[in-house]
Length: 188
Image (cartoon, rainbow, N blue to C red; front, side, top):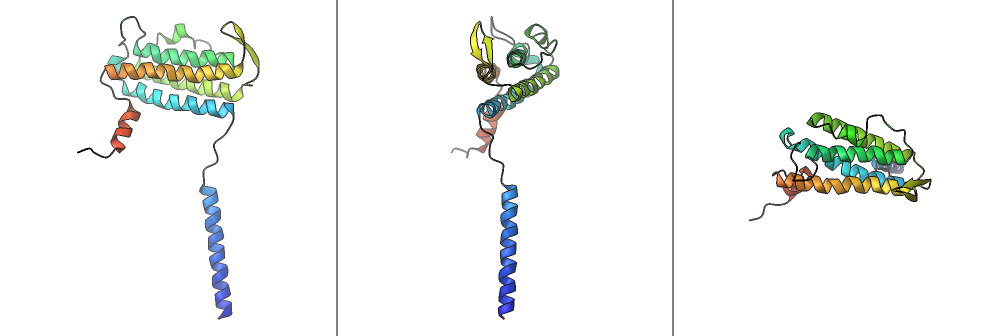
């Protein structure tokens, strides 16, 4: 009887240890920390929302704009040009043809989305490979790369706000708003 109890206890201990290892393996890795990781998270937040919004806009609304302002496609491509510009300030190799003049001419929805996605790959790579404390001239004054990183992230969010206004004026609900509304209980 003692042997049976001992074997049962050992088996329970082994199962518990195995379950503990499985839980440890299944647990997500802690979020990366530091200025680069924080900026990347901010950029990825904007990236996900902007891509969803670009996909939500119908092609016929890519040419829409309020009087005196950029068109929908021009705002998306302005964001992409900003990603390339800020990445260049960070020391990433410049990509020929990826500038405001060239990108602003892209108006086809599929090409806008493709260019926008490529610009986010570029800017995240630039952030990951940059030295945040490296000195640079930014907007005519002495600064460090970290400021270019912050400007890249805030630039994306600034123009996302503009595009949300464009969407709402055109009767388009941002996808993440629609998802949040769908999760709310129905009101009586």
